[in-house]
Image (tube, rainbow, N blue to C red):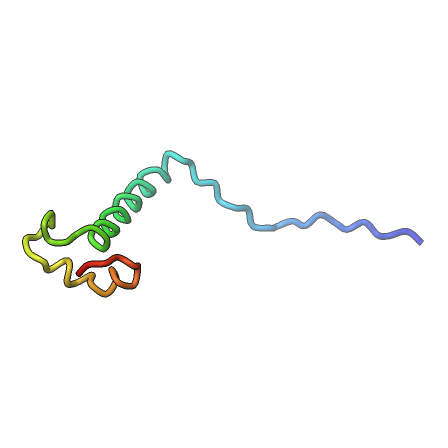
Length: 72
């Protein structure tokens, strides 16, 4: 008894190919955005804050403690 040969599957969806040239600006944008968010959460104490005062520090206060950053 021989085994039947399966027919090749047709109509399978192909994965889209995204060129690096189109992906690079988005990767740069989200990398810079992530770095900015990390700065505000981790390092901003009001001394080098973009808006003057401690407003940003107060907005991210709980996130700082959740991530393990001491702030007072």
